[in-house]
Length: 349
Image (cartoon, rainbow, N blue to C red; front, side, top):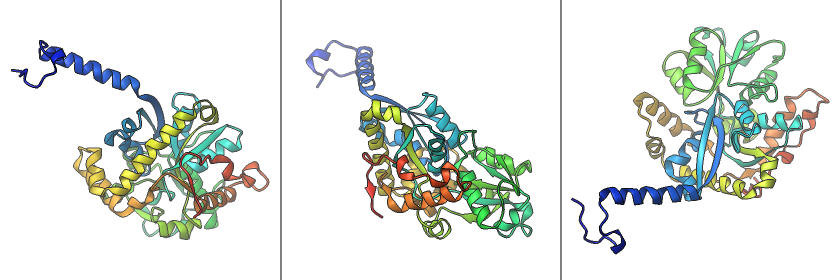
């Protein structure tokens, strides 16, 4: 029985059903007042893009007056296609893949940083242990990547090309690339079927594939020290981007979305891996344990505040130019033309 004690006078006389109707109406009004934003990204379950999955879990969108809807795809270029088609307002994916679009004259812009490193693990089929001991041994092999499109190569492919060139391999002539998706099921199937010999994969999927005995690690770029040694500095990988027409037409939407992301990144910085995994409410015990293991090792891959850094921009520009054909537009691309730091900020180092 519902007590009338303490109930406001204008509620008196309402039964439980009436109160529930009032509550539902109030909630509808709150929801209607929130700014709807749609974001495309890779995943779900990808460590690199974990902040996006956390947003609604911790209420970071509602805290900034936003109702966020997330659309998941099998790779960054597919998320960009969704954004360019107008199905989503923003995309979180790799900066080098976004640069490919800009070089082709597509009007896009990066407004906040998510990662500080290229969040990839170069893995090799366990059956090739002893045959593949370093990157130079990948000559003539099939290498799995997340995905690519005609307009943009995935960042995973661009990182693979960079590493292959450094090892003396022509990626256009001496290896084959194969889209292998950006979920554990897809990457597991790529190895199990023999479709790929090596894979530029993601965490926590790499942890799972190694523990299952399907692959071994050749190079892990998640560690800041390894990133600096291999790439020349910290790296602008996953970042929040949008179309320039949306930036000019709805700057308040861009500002609000950046605030949502910054709130989420700050929350990650202030919480333990255990608390982060708990917030995601993953039901599968094995998947939960794998994510926790990866987070304990790699929680520092995330930007603490979404700001860009000069080190990231220098490193990513040098990387991108090195991957271009000499004399092509991309070989002289200025990464600063891709960056709009007014909402997230810019650090000098």
